[in-house]
Image 1 (cartoon, chains in turn orange, cyan):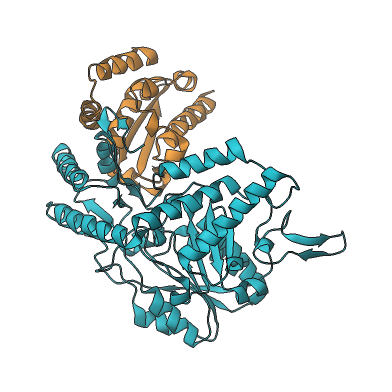
Image 2: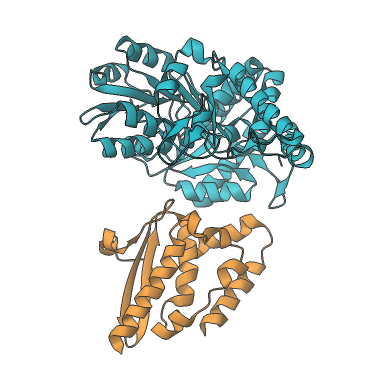
Length: 140
Length: 393
């Protein structure tokens, strides 16, 4: 599936629920699907510090594909990262760099995204793109 | 605002320590200024400027009487408690602080009563000394006394911990400092809205608060200073309305309190702030305190009965604020889910990271009530917290 196909399928899944509590329950379920980072990489080097919850992100690059594992100390954040990695992990650097992430807004999680909210998600997307750019430069 | 719905549920607003909702009289007062007498204060020869200036000065009298200051000249308007503290830290530092001097604050301070002093200490080569707190969130008074010395230039303490709700013994703190002729600044941002404040009986040298936390508009604040101090301090900002004469060689400053009010003040906000104080006086400050006491004891019992919930800050003297954590559940998760139930609380460090460090936590969930909250709302909060626990286990 393309980046946008996955985004659309997430949007569809969330649209099944009207009540906000159900949407968040779904997010908590999603947290279980997160490709979890090896604990040995839960270090300062891979920490994306936010004001409210911590996020660790570990990148890998092989065969032209960028993959990520991650974790957070807050479950809701973990759920959002799981969604994010569903969309962006296992992609080529170009796919990541050129992607337009509209699903977060469309499923109503935009409040988690604003830079002032500083829960690490905003910085995380930036970090994912930076890694992709670095890998792209390396492979060229 | 308090009647509105969020996520299709009635809003339960329990973030009053961050900001309070406004009485209609306050909102109408701002509208009135802009609709009926909007002219820049202290400047015009025309009638609308006169009316606005008079209302502004009436507001000053109103604040004076509310905190029982001796003179109107001791009331300086600012944009908030943060601006007030920055002003004192700067001006006091310029006038009185030298290398090797010390400033005493407490562990319970909001960043607004830490950073301005830190900046001043860096500039002057002075040292910040910090009063420690015990496991209940109370300052250790004996340690405070040990910190006072002939090097101490000023003590700056909060009246109430914004993160824990614990009330500090400011009167005792002031008395001890005064015995050594050290002035004291009290940060009243979390204190003034919950009970009587009488700056003369406290005998504090400076008292600051923010308008928006006492049902007034955002962007308004007060700096009370004893006349003798305000006379001695240089202005913290230069500009219009704070001067007597300006030439390029020498400027002479205006009299108190105008010396500290550079530029156009938020006069519509200040005029409306006076309405907020009226509102509180009309309700009765003692009545408000009694009602809030009841809310606090009910909420403490209701939340305290929840297994896995730990309250931080358990002193006898508290404002109706409860800081807590649920075992093995991140404060951010708790806050986000409560929000979806229509319950507004604050999560995180509450701009008081040293307090969080002291208790070895990364943050807490803070429920801050005020007189317009109800027992029913606390019950709904209790149920909400129980739902959070079941969702995350």
